[in-house]
Picture (cartoon, rainbow, N blue to C red):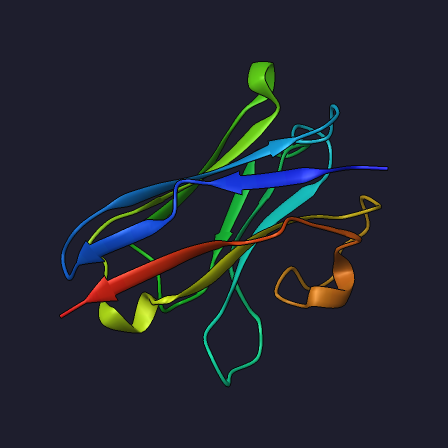
Length: 126
């Protein structure tokens, strides 16, 4: 069983920055798919960014490209999401997710991930 604990959320003004962290309970960050998702009130959960540690590959939704950066610290077994130039539309509950296998076909799909954190709230005011 894998436990994921997010932190780093908060309230910022538009244009500001936040860094989210996701601490995993065991050694998976460097080997499995890890993703950041977000869910705004009344909307479906959507994929924001993903990282495949085995290849060192990062993937981003078009809405955050150039503003968000996903990274990992293997020694700390922690995944990060650096969010810059935040916009009010980035306001959501952000979740960390980890795949249960290495075979992920579509990183944006929630069903690809077997483990989820509890979420951390990000609020961006205009």
